[in-house]
Image (cartoon, rainbow, N blue to C red; front, side, top):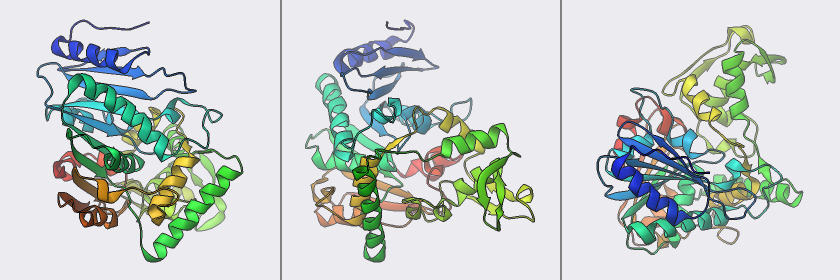
Length: 388
């Protein structure tokens, strides 16, 4: 059954056309102040749907489209529609105000169970799902468009651009992601690739980052005792709040096959150990814990396909045989913006695009920002989004 709202003028008419173009699914319409949102899980007979969110301005017609592609384990609502309160902007609305139709494409795993996810849910499958959405909308709108993604979504944006020959593809925005490493880091990436490949061979098809649960416990029971050993004295345990802040600001120090790719962490901040875990002192610099909580609370499964992580690690390792991005085929303008404390100053991917003959490539690093701060930071609009 379809849920509609009739008071949205131009926005409703546009979204109705988009809904028809995308095909079957149960659509939900949410009106806002000067905008309207369509959410449509696409019913294609698969075990879980790709979900498309469209944010349209109700006053003016769009001059172009931006496809927003969330990071691994995230969805459109968590990544690009948070924060959402009065006076707290989000990237989706910032881009809408630039005259763009915002189209969020949430991958299937957000609506899936672990049993649904298979070894086939790698980067190529994500690219094909995105291409289906883009093709459907391009056929009825014919507007110039941009791919914009964060983290794994940025890698998807770059990969999609390398396969998309449409003259209407104008830009790619890559937020805090990694192209191929060189030297010892490439070898480390190859070991990470092999680790994920081994997991797949053993039938382990999903990765659960666990961050949502840690943040939820930090909010609900900050002083409670977590099960995680406290580094100064492993016989003791972090508090829930201490663990969440440590995981956010010192991600690279945590065990895990891919935490090493961060210079420091998901969020800029400080963490000083006290005499006991309860006396630890910590703070987040750009993204408050309540915003992290709002984002992670909006997640579906929160799972990442192991096949996707294997393919990303192959890209990091420069292993074109297993999975490579055709950097020399990216012809659109590229704005690549990394976070100093996230993926850091690693411009190799941008350099390869330039080496392929595309001179319309910029690579910048935002000082003092963590991986998630580039989308959720209180001052990200001025510090980050103004760069693309």
